Length: 138
Length: 222
Image (tube, rainbow over all chains, first blue to last red; front, side, top):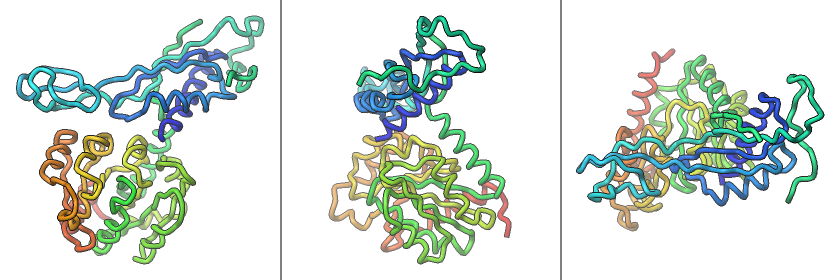
C-alpha cells in the first residue's frame, strides 16, 4: 500500500508549489504515473481523499495520466506501447524489447483558485496556503 | 482558476534524504546494498549464508527492516556483525529517512559494506530509493515463476537477481530457464544467481560478485 505514501508526497509537493506561487487554494493536481510504478488508481484516489483533509489540497481533485512503457519489436521492428503487463507486439506477437518510460512519478501542474481571498493581498513572503480553511468535504 | 506548471518528482523528499545517505556512504567509503523481495523469500537466511563468506574480506554492517519484532536483527547479531533493526510499525516499505535515523547506531566509518534488508514485500519497497548503490532482488522458487512479470519494478531496478530456495525445486512448479528469460526481458543487464542458502549452493558466486562490486567501487582501506 505505497499509494498512501504517494498521496501524502503529492500533497506535500503541491503545497510547496502553491506556496512558491503565493497561491492559497489548490483545486486540482495533475500527475503522471508510469505503469511500472504499480500504483493502483483506485487505491491512490482513496488514499488521496483520506490524506488531503486539513491541507491546502483539502478540496482538490487529483487527476492522473497513466504513462505506458514503449517497446520495440525484435521481429518486425515496430515500436509500440505496452498494454499493462502484456509486452507482446500487437502486430506479430513477439516479446517487446528495450523498454522506455513507465517509471514516471511526477506532479505536472496544479490548479489554483485565484477568486478565493481576493481582498487579502499580502506580500509574497507571507503568503501561505492555509492548512485549514473551512471544514473539508468528507 | 490558474494552472501552475510544477513538473517535480512526487517522491522528491525521499530522494533528497536518499542523496544525503548516499553522500554519507561515499564519504565513509561504504558501499550500500538494498536487498528486496517478498515476505519469506529467504532474505535473512541468504544474509546468514553470505556474511560468513564475505566477512574475511570485508567489514560489514546490516540494517534489518521489518514491520515488527527484532528477530531478524538477533539472527544477524548472533554472527557478531554490527546490526540495527528498523521497525516501520506496520509500514510496508523502508524509506530513506528510516535509514537516516538508523545510521547513528551503525559504526559507518569502520565498514566497507552496509547491507539493508528491506521489509518483506515485492511491491512497495521498489519505489523508494534508500541511498543504496546497488539493489539485489530475491525471488524464492516457492513464490512461483510468474513473479518477475507480476512485480516487474522489483526486477527492473535490481543490479542482480537472486533465485533462492533452489533445493525446493522438486516440490514446486518453477521453470528456472523460463524465469531467467522473463528476467532478461525486464532487465537484460542483471546477472541471475541460483542459490540454496541451507546447502550453501550458489552462495560463493554471489559473494564473489558482491566482493567484486565493492572493490570496483573504490580501493579498500585495510
